[in-house]
Image (cartoon, rainbow, N blue to C red; front, side, top):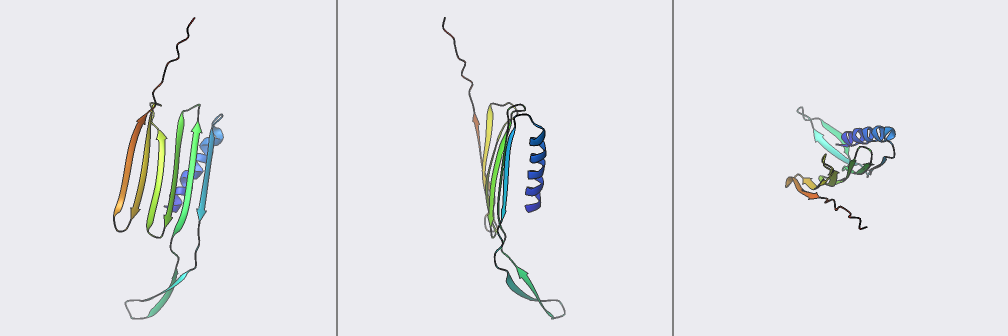
Length: 128
């Protein structure tokens, strides 16, 4: 997941660099905690040691390009085995927006709440 996030951020940075008047931002925070020593035995009964750190990260990005109408954002964070996040994007018709809040953990699996909204265009009438 960490590598996917880095790849997505790199692609958006390149796309934003070529877009006129486009705005993008991204961040990535990896939190390293103290390593825990883990002991285990192999199939021959030999003791081995390794070190384990609970995964913890947070990332996000935003893209807003008025030329291509590409508007999207995502924010995600992980602490131990729990992942929570949110993303939104403007649909290709430029009037609908999709918003997704999601979470996942080893006990309940993956769950997503998807909402669609529409942005109405209100015409302005000029009175003479």
